[in-house]
Length: 629
Image 1 (cartoon, helix red, strand yellow):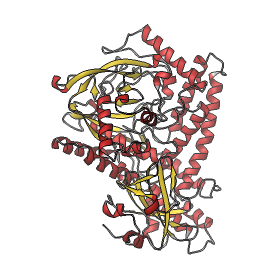
Image 2 (tube, rainbow, N blue to C red; image 1 turned 45 degrees about the horizontal axis):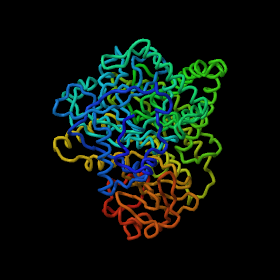
Image 3 (cartoon, helix red, strand yellow; image 1 turned 180 degrees about the horizontal axis):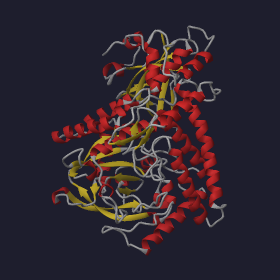
Image 4 (cartoon, rainbow, N blue to C red; image 1 turned 45 degrees about the vertical axis):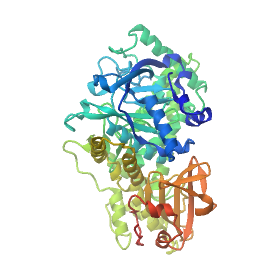
């Protein structure tokens, strides 16, 4: 595949950037379809994922290093398929590739990636219609473009999901402003004018859909050879993918065995359901073979556990296991058909896969429910757990339909939300305030469970503080509000006709920080009372439930021995305790303090937060008044 990354980076730097990313060309030559795109003359970098580049060994906080990365991104991906744009907006041409994949039901008219252009091990989503856009596709699914707003919205959702979900999400590493506009068929009635085009840059991934056929694909005017030839390539691609996946010979780090994959997917679904986050539905085309989520164009942070319908052709929120069963059935058929029938019959493969998924889902769902009230992994099932499962099932009886992030039609009023009940209990002088009959059994069970514990620790109130954090709404991730906010931002930065990355990155990092409610490496004994976060940097004001002491927990991004935090670099030797922990390109440290307010106001607080301190302090149960800076 045509790629120019070698013109900008040395071999060891390329190896760091490629770490864990699939080279699709290694799977099958039939997987990729070439096409030509034209260079954009006015493209610019709109957003750069500083976190991702730091964790892959490039210090893009340095102006020279950042310029090098931006020049690569524009040289590699600053192209679109010509679609009527003004001739002066276009330069030379370059060959990209689109990747063939199918679907679980086999009814899609497309033959794979209809708007993504691959160069090397990265792809540009929104490049324009590729040869895999099929005849008969709806206009909204055939234009091949992406709005700049959509690209930025995906970046926000993918960063939050990547940080919180047990198996993460495929990151957006950059967003480019194409410098041109298009009329979006999906935006009619929402926005009355042309939309600014964007290009979303992300690593290539292998998907379960790569192991499924696209039998109804017929190439359009821009397409590849149609009919028999196209279907022969589709068969060859599917056979190669199935055999490589079953034979554990896919590129290293880019896939796990099918049994492991489906267990991970069940765990992802359980997390999504309990914490009310969705990317629109778990399909074989929007997850990777390591179970990372991708494609957040229809992402939602939902207000409760109602059965939310986002797409006509897909099960709603709460019924993702139905979709996963259909994927298991489809994969079982292709494993049997293209694995030379060495496997058992498809029915037996499906039964094994989904049995694993069901068991993993039940366990993960219970564990996530327990985490809502601060119970650590491996704890015995509490007596209130059946009540919470029943409450989830009761809420699922309410049906609500969403469009552009908003409920449509005459909806049945929602039931009282558990999170609101928790907030009411915390607001009262005693958490024994009478509550809705459906949540009162949970309170009674919690009281019984914590009876006899010392008043100085107050585990009952701690459980409610944690529940308040995990069950609270995420207004920064509300899809409707996020679309409106990012559209305003795009209007402002494009009308200014000036470099936009700094303004956009500040906004996006603020949205990510305000949306976070979970930190994987936070010790289980720490109860979060308040937070201050910006991007992947945060201060958590905590109480240690083992001894009742105040703790400040800090985390950020690590590049070797250097620690990045709130937009600046710190030395762990001079500004942080030697107990600083590093894992997965992140660092964290717990500091015991006499009081949160005194630490925050004193010179003991690292200078970075005093100087920059973007964003507000989000309080869950904070009694101290923190000074502002």
